[in-house]
Length: 349
Ligand SMILES: Nc1nc2c(c(=O)[nH]1)N[C@H]1C(S)=C(S)[C@@H](COP(=O)(O)O)O[C@H]1N2
Ligand SMILES: [Mo]
Image (cartoon, rainbow, N blue to C red; front, side):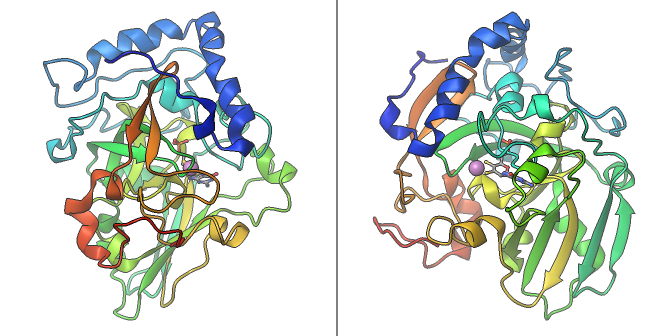
């Protein structure tokens, strides 16, 4: 892996500067917790970091405070076989410690050190949980999430992950394509969009109570053609294990060609509808967050550039990289967006 490069402050959005600098200091904290060694040891095992690529991510239980994997999460099927067509050759895999300790999950934390989510997840019990699939479908159903996870064939996919705040990672997710759920409920031809709702548990999620003016629960949406694209993934795990609470247990969406906020965590409702549904961040800041939100270096955020990103491979290893259109997934999804800007524009979409 290349030299350590901490980018200068101008790339850090003003409002995030406090949390970002707190993050830079976390290395010392992790060392104190004995987690620094885990990051180093695990890197050696990861395919992509060495010449011998394995077909699965070895089970890596972080035996420490970052192990917030719910006790009742089903363990069958982990680690899953990796589907090699999604390999990410140009980047190392982000360490588990970085991916599990630098998070966005506003149900737990909405101000202060925004990324330090995991210490606040103690009261959250993601299992048991039910998920409802409903709306314009032939076969609506409500299922226990643990049963659903046991029923699905799990696979592992390495995906680039890009947050709108211009940081990025490479993460080995475990789960199944969203379209396998969609096939099961048989949407009617009148369904044009899918709406997702996250769990709403104020007593277990301190950010919901403290940020009481936010329009909880978190909600998102996709066009039908996006939801059925092979890339759209329901993640039930990462790094060969069930998802830690802070990463969206019991299951969350991952849409690697879009900014991270398009992928709701702890999804409990999937509804098929006949118009574009409202979305959480668009309702909060219509001038900053559009409905499509495809990763696009040509469309800056109102307060910062999207042409570059800070790639996080470990808690103290951050490199500047150019941002790719559709986060490098043009082959999969480019044809869905004939109007996607390929030249600089300030149009939010
Ligand atoms: N329910 C819910 N889902 C959410 C969010 C959130 O605050 N609440 N944050 C989003 C944002 S902005 C990002 S970048 C990703 C972060 O996922 P990670 O913490 O696993 O990296 O989750 C997305 N999904
Ligand atoms: Mo994000």
